[in-house]
Length: 292
Figure 1 (tube, helix red, strand yellow):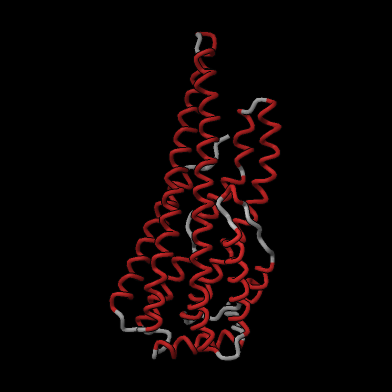
Figure 2 (tube, rainbow, N blue to C red; figure 1 turned 90 degrees about the vertical axis):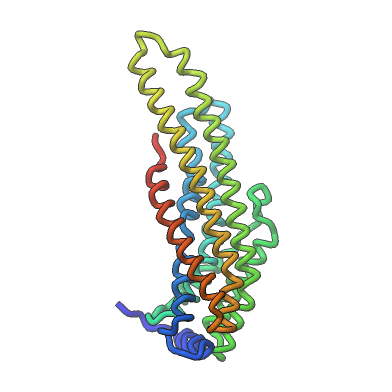
């Protein structure tokens, strides 16, 4: 089902086509659309954010009474951090979705999504989210709101690319910082859970407890594999963000010079890398689903 694009966005599409000197099927425009669409998936970030949010339910069976009380408090904080982590992702995804929509042939209405960015986020210094990232989020929301209502469409496209570059880089850096924070949280959880097995299994490893010991060892191996896969996913997801950040120079260059072969090649290479990373993440994230 096609949804009519607001007048401003229809004009933006036309303006971007004019900027490239061609229609939506122009090779340069196709490269922009492919890159924006591949980037917009932000592969792995949402799943790993959810994994971070659900740390306490996975840890709970292995916690002492004192540790459980402490982790309950941290669980509440994690859920607040998770909400802001998703808001950051939404702003970046929407920016890339707008670029893909403007460079595409379909019809989209992104007005509701832009309005949904009204919720503010706050700094979480422990996670790496600083005031500069909060400001970048505000700038991105403002830029997207202005883009949808801009009366001069071609100028709006140029403004979006120019003014969006810095807040986009800041938000990608914020997401990378969060992934590193998730990785540390995963390491703490791993040490806690596997530490319980390392301490308890030797005491339970007696003839009457043979079945119990066997099951515990199998669970120990399963959890160890889960944490290794999660660590790999953090690396892949962070690499995705780095690819997107590095490709912004090529995107800006191609917008300015549609016949720039080097810029086109860089965007195409970035799109290929993002597809490869997404395929790898899809496999390992499914394999790393939490095991009770």
